Amino acid sequence: MLELRPNCECCDQDLPADTGLAYICSFECTFCADCSEHYLQLICPNCGGELLRRPHRPTSKLAANPASIKRVFNPALKAALARGARAAALPLGQRLPTSTSTLMVLDLLR
Image (cartoon, rainbow, N blue to C red; front, side, top):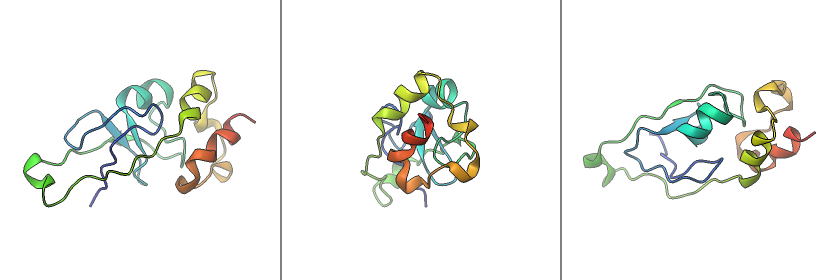
């Protein structure tokens, strides 16, 4: 079952479980539509995988299967991307695992 993380990792925008504006990769890194399309070009900056629209969970199912409340936020990511850094340009072997996505900006700025 998907975690349905509550926010964009890039800009911290709230992304409720029933929204159609969330994008995820296969590791469930979560981004809003604006960051996914305009900054990330639909490529996850953590793993290099494609970002696809996250399915929403019907409201009737949320009580028994609640969305995650754990927020993952990397405030330096959007700033680095706005300056022209491209996560997708990094060779796959140089990207950090999703569990260390907060540190990924260091690789972007090299």
